[in-house]
Image 1 (cartoon, rainbow, N blue to C red):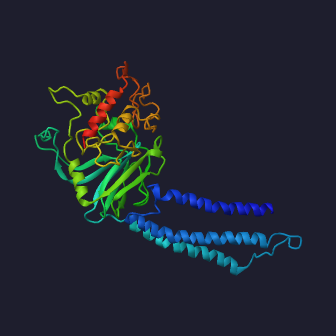
Image 2 (image 1 turned 90 degrees about the vertical axis):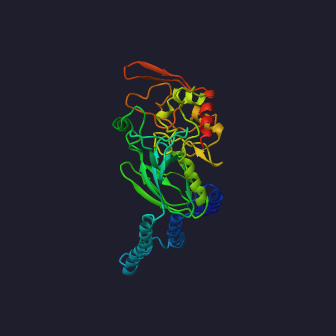
Image 3 (image 1 turned 45 degrees about the vertical axis):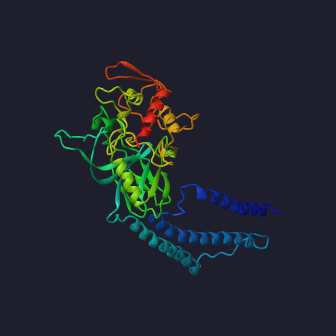
Length: 425
């Protein structure tokens, strides 16, 4: 057997292997754009399928013609110079017009689909503001106005004594939506207006420049839309059936890009209404002790490690530097955390709080920058990105030039916080 023939046989034998390998993981990877479960995804599939088979037909024809011509007209002693076709008007016009016709045939349905996917949502759609952060997703769901209450049942009041009201609920990484109803996502990157204890807006913007692009993608429900600093992009999706649909950031955004995931859980209208109503309730327990009360172990640990600097604990409507934890406790058995990549069990929660980067405990996710609570200061004017490693002491220099060392968190303290969070459902 000639060397050329063995090469071609080897190449063709790999094709079935590649097909079998790709098909084996397709149904179970939970991020399959070839199995559309939403209106937008179906439109994309309707565009993709015919173009794919056109490309396969053309590619197969070119491959067969190339192989045939290479053998049929190969140079021999009798035929060392193949016949030249330069100046053949029919051939030259044909292979110019045919690709043009094919491209026009592809362009028309493509442009039509692009405009269809860019349409605004109809009346009755749910509006959700999506913020891509390092490295997790924040969802602020628009709701009817509702009053804010404290954990003891008393109303939250403004400076004039009026009951405070809100018109949104804020969650992280997992969003619950009703099936068969349009969801209009307003997608942006970072959040320069996020309040942080002890920081003005200008100080926050200076310390945390919003310069990272993310890409919002839930393959089973629709296409990708970039989250770009300084602008808002729109995406309208609708799940055709109840279920959990997994998505991720599809634009490299730094240290933990590979595990910046999310879940969209489509449920019935009644279940969705129940979920919203629960988020509008005050927390089961306060994160800080009331005046005259002895702090619980969890409250003491939350204050000791300044958890409220980055997280909201007592108000579902508040955006925060880190995920809003007011109703962190799971309502469903398959909820996620840690950028949407870790199952939310109580054991995983306390281990994550204690040391999110610990490979031995099954986390091993680089949710922090190298200068974030690793025994050194992040530097004046800087902040940590992602979840710090609280298991080690933290050294820094305060505004007066004094060296300060914060203690590491014990496992007991981490478990106390995790237990508290699990109660707040």
